[in-house]
Length: 401
Length: 225
Ligand SMILES: Nc1ncnc2c1ncn2[C@@H]1O[C@H](COP(=O)(O)OP(=O)(O)OP(=O)(O)O)[C@@H](O)[C@H]1O
Ligand SMILES: [Mg+2]
Image (cartoon, rainbow over all chains, first blue to last red; front, side, top):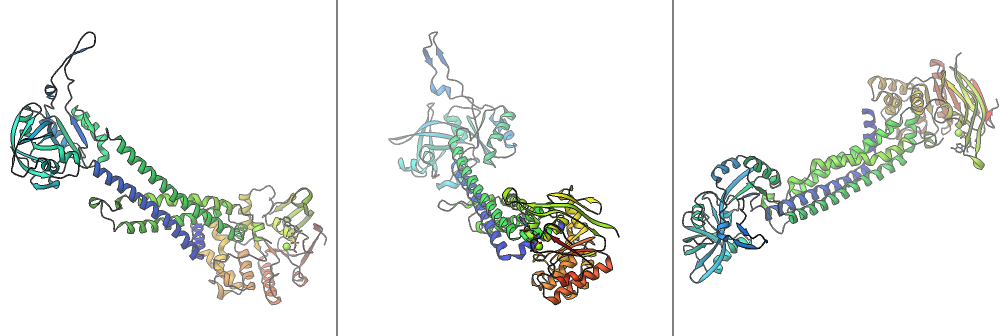
């Protein structure tokens, strides 16, 4: 079919301006396709990194022992154990699990923690806080505490406390001051404020405080184990699969971040659907453009098609000549559109440097290969109708003798 | 001489019902190998229709059509395409050449389309034919830029490319001045003499017809002389 390809190429080069316009039209469609891919992909990435970048991707909670309840034969609750007691459920073997979890592919950080509620007192002022005890050295494993520090250090030594700016402002705190922290279990400690952070998340900035894991052990009377293990992954989307793996490996109740994030997932899904919709339209435009241009060409070349048929060219040959034209247009338009798209995306900041207020275009999510493949396939599809019309040309009427 | 083409009781009707036009009404004709025949007749008598049927570009409404012993009425499109490519050459009055191709590319088309590529052997034969047609200087010329007479000579060369037994020419000189017309006819005569190719040439021109050894006149849908 080398010869058919030659004829197709000659037809395309014979009307250069028309072919150039057609290729340009296809390229614009491909450009839109790539632009949409980069935008939708970048936007999803941006939203995810904003919302779940700082949280644990897979979390292991201590099996919450049901609060011991005493129920009468009639179904009345007679007695419930104290809340403080119910909290003592622990991941007692945490020290063995942590190194094992760290070996799971895709896991980039593991942070065993002891969490609980408490009251922070500074003079006459009292604030209810949520306490997180983190292993020294793992302060920034999940929440990038180091990166959010506005004063002091994120380093959690013994006897120190790190808290958010809103809380510090509420209680008029300064670095170096001592504070009293009382746990829900009734244990009380005096701690020194060594760092203030601002994450931008209201809850964390107002309600969370961080202490070292040993400090938390004392506060919550947990001589061993932890209550909570947070795990960060290289790929957010691998959370479900990785959680399953960890569960299989350790038997612990590993929960992916997607559990309970249905609304976010739905929103991202809707966004992706919008992207597919727009990309489909770009492809449909390409198909219609190529089909109409080739159909015009078959009408214009009717006498020639007639001559070729009279000279012994079969219907298959004629079909090939027109389909090849479509494929070549698709390939040229696809390649140039992809190149334009790539060049147009170059000036946008990389995904690591997205800033609010700019379009979070992700040049790595342009789907270039897919765009080119779909365009060539679309152009071939578009040429089938004109090619069949060409093959049906009656040589007698076309030559018009 | 061998019988090359035989048509018998050829009927061709265009349209149907009230609008039906019966162009051929039981026409019979045989062509012997090596003949050079002029096809005469008034305008609208069915000369082009007959040539089209003989060229397997159209099927008769009824009647028999055999060439080289093959029943061409029964053959399907694929078989007819291959048969045409190997055994029949055409020269039309208008729309003869592919305008985006050179003279040589046009001439070798019938071979290239069969072989799937343009071979050196085909190019050599194409050059030889064009030279023979007095177009040595125009071999790689874009065919759109050739004069009317040159185009017809390229068309004759192309018709001969696959060494067909039969060349059908429908008013090949109808568009040409006397000198060009004579030149084309001389070349056709030469090929006919030298290679024994059978020609059937429709024309309104008595002078052109006079250059052929046999004349067939069509009238009222049958051969009248
Ligand atoms: N496709 C068609 N549909 C209807 N009628 C047709 C068709 N082709 C030819 N005819 C009619 O058939 C008749 C014969 O036409 P044809 O072209 O064979 O004549 P011709 O002898 O070649 O005439 P001319 O010398 O003018 O070329 C004409 O009356 C023409 O109108
Ligand atoms: Mg005619």
